[in-house]
Amino acid sequence: MGTKNKGTVAFLVICFGTTWAYIFGARFLLDLSLVNPLVQLPMAFFPAIAAIIVRRWITREGFRDAGLALRLSSGWPYYVVAWVGPLLVVMAAVGLAAALGLWSPDLSPLDTIVVGLPAWASLSLLMAVVVLLIPVYWGEEFGWTSYLRMRIFTDRPLLSVTATGLIWAVWHYPLAFVGYIEFENIPLGLFIWTVTFLFQEVILAWLRLRSGTIWTSSLAHAGNNMVLFLLTGMLLPNLDINTITLLVTAPLAAISAWIVLSGKFRSDKGALSEDSPLVSGSTSGRSHPSNSGGF
Figure: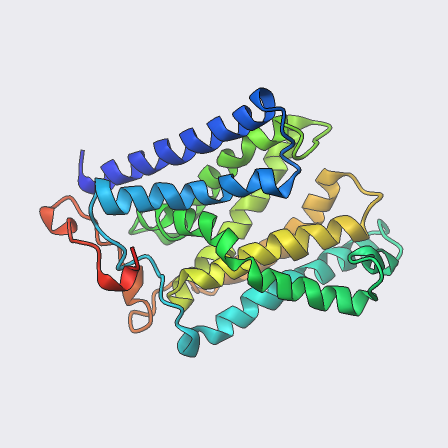
């Protein structure tokens, strides 16, 4: 088995093994609720832990292509997109719901985000919290978007992103059986959920690719969880989870189509020197970790 394949297999075994064991152990052995953010927290870092173990000790490729540099000066437009994008998708999703007659515009639920604060202040606070939570969501992005996605189908970016999105979705599947998310029809719910993950991964990978840093996609991932899905659930309380997910998926699909059809996955070699995988079947892939990697 080549070095790259060895690393990919090891990453998947460690990531899935630790995460699924933790989920089922927490729920059925310790009787903990996966709805509790503190119980969820450890699983957010298992992909990163798996990637670190593989990069440092299994393939020994190091972290030079991990996208750990902030790149604020060149990547700031992508940080802005990653930060405000989820809020714009909320607007598109609820606008679509209104157009379809599924929602009568009512923003009053936003007054309950933080008791005692008006909606505008609560939203401002929420957007600030998203930035503070970047390190938490880095845990997944460092594994999926900044390791696996760069190691499978490396010469076919769209196929790589699709495969990563599918694997990322399957990694979440146990959550549908432990009370984290309640689907009335589990097979249908998992299918719709998977489609949403696919379109999210297209956008997250695009941010990582174009900015050259993992921190933009980590910011967008935080926004998806803390703004996009939170606010759409609050604003559309009378709709079932599948309908809400489909409404969110529609604008995500449109953005993904624009990214793919406009050729936005084409590499800008001047800006993306960190986005070239170091691993190959040769021994040259076994470089030592660079100092810039921080590990």
